[in-house]
Image (cartoon, rainbow, N blue to C red; front, side):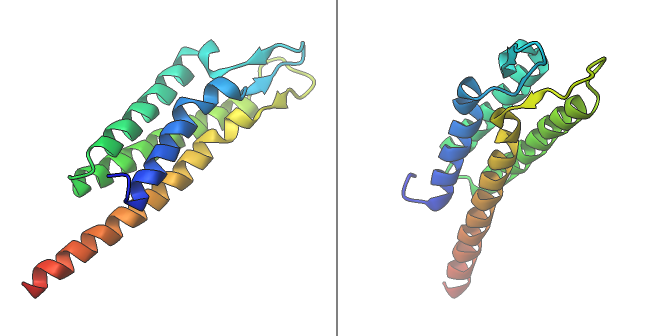
Length: 136
């Protein structure tokens, strides 16, 4: 399981969506209040779903097609999360000064990148298995 490169990518995506949001804040308000993902239920739910999908995909290493589909769903979920962050950034209600953006807003981009790399490796494995099956 861990000897495959897509497992490493999925483990890193799991860490990025599961552990790093606790470390990095999403943004800092103009009054100095730091906002983490736990302050809003929709961000908590989306990060949690993304983490769960990464873990289930990591553990279903024998089913490559299922792993591929779960990664695609996870990419879509992270795109939705990124869209919510962009929407929040562009439509800040009643704020005259710009609030400081945190590193946590870029975590979905890193997760998407890792999931795309994992999908490329899964596709490569699937093509290798198909070519070996043709030789038999």
